[in-house]
Length: 319
Image (cartoon, rainbow, N blue to C red; front, side, top):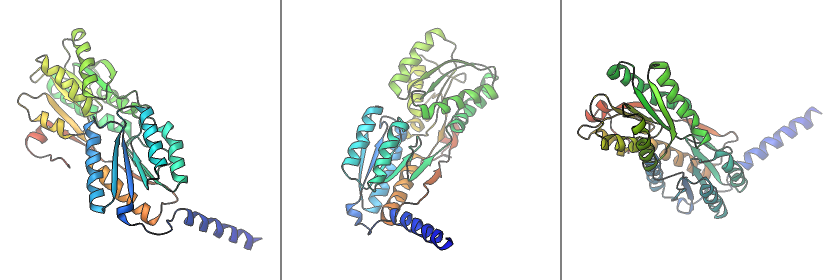
């Protein structure tokens, strides 16, 4: 009986190893990986794309980037098309992770390598992930500490989030919690969903007439932060009593921080270039050498970047 059990275990292990190993290494020129981005209008995903492109060029493989244009249904169709086209790997950040999970399972059954970043997808061979609430708290804490130093711990804030994406709602929760924990007298006048500059501009323009004494815009992404900044700047909200904060440390925001009279006070660096670059390198290794039985998990690092760090040259972007 023991012998039969041992043989059964060995057979199972051999099956698992065989299932996760490629038959033969492929010519790099024949390898195709698709990056299905949620929205290339978001500068952070352009940063991820730049890392993807750099890694693909180094490896000599074919890479395609597809823009879902902030449309969850389109992203599902894009992923389905990549699977139908028999790519070697698919890499995405989800607009709707639940909807993509069965598609990723199908991709795995076809022998494709699956990976996801930031807003991750079940059935990924690689999860390049982060704690959304903690990331939001880091964004909010930077704004709150600025309010302590410049507003006496008081003031009014507009919070712009990505609550339309269930996976990212916790980020907005983290922002609000940090403001309340560190500056309980700061009033969050509104919490609106905005993940692109245009929508953020519209919402900020609606909030200002009702709250002419608004001091801060705190956004969960640079893309929305830029829209809030444009609206405040257009309404002559300049000087030490005003500030915009967000997360991503994109080149666009770093440029704005250096502008004369800029009130863009801080962002948080998520190093999108590194995330894209490392993900492609790991996927390539999996394509050539086999996927692990247990998925690989990598944590994104993030650090606060103040306006002073940018203007002094202390902080230099990674891409």
